[in-house]
Image (cartoon, rainbow, N blue to C red; front, top):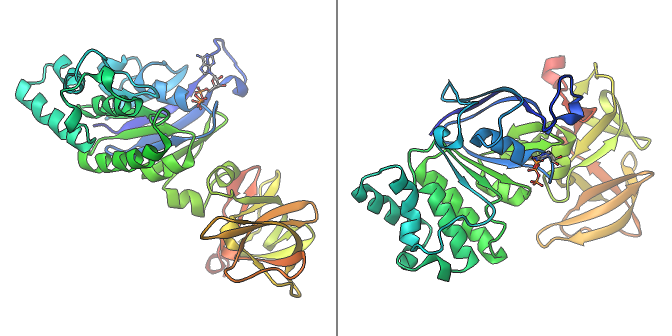
Length: 366
Ligand SMILES: Nc1ncnc2c1ncn2[C@@H]1O[C@H](COP(=O)(O)OP(=O)(O)OP(=O)(O)O)[C@@H](O)[C@H]1O
């Protein structure tokens, strides 16, 4: 297991000096991945996840910067020399071998003593519910079981610096996905290994990881716990990408402790006296905007739709040119097609050119 440091790392698939920023599939990033941490690398297709993963594993050499494992520079080392285990989207196993032989292979390859191999294979097979299949040829198994073997082959070595998973549940049947996701989380706790899990699926990322690293357009825009990403998105993309529905992000004029949104005044819990120049927006999650009866001083809008998500209802409300998703309190139904919105001031964030702006709290102002 290792701590992994990325030091001013960047990568472009184009060669040349003075490349423009948009030529970089990975824009400059410096960050540390804790030893023994469970990380998810989350973002939409094409945002640079695989590029970053391949740089960590040694498949791609970065055009700039360094990568350190426990302080040692491994930028020029091969995957094998970095001691990394990888699990890919599709099963990588030997069909002609039994499940036991497949699981034992990475250990045999590294000259691990026979008794230790038997013990570790039994342990991993048990964790993945593969014990009843140990003596069966892999070729006879379902796609799900084959991918479980792939996971097992990734997890079987206890001496690896890190295990990298690249969308490992793609081929898994939907009803088994949830089970395997929880299993991977339990495996992380049991095995105490550094794991990095690449996905474009927020549910997979949020259930697996202690720390979620969100990428957008080649940039790491935030790295934090699932709670931090929900409570305080550092970038509007995080607000929009995480959560269902995503965060309301609307243009605003912000002055002191007030935002002007679609011609209405919205009180803020923090004060913003020196805003950077750029496009100013406020962001507030639908969970903290409450649909309520019209009343003086409250923003009124047209209720276009109410979606019942089972335990919770969200309304889509139009105020002038702006649209909000708002929570519909239990037992409330709007009388007519208009209703008011009540915002929780402490849950409203201010963004300048998509980046969060720190306001000062009342105590700081006093
Ligand atoms: N070998 C390559 N040569 C040139 N461009 C590449 C190469 N691999 C990726 N890219 C480009 O780099 C950018 C980032 O791609 P990358 O595969 O890292 O994203 P991703 O987030 O993993 O997406 P996906 O989930 O679709 O794999 C994309 O614009 C992609 O077209």
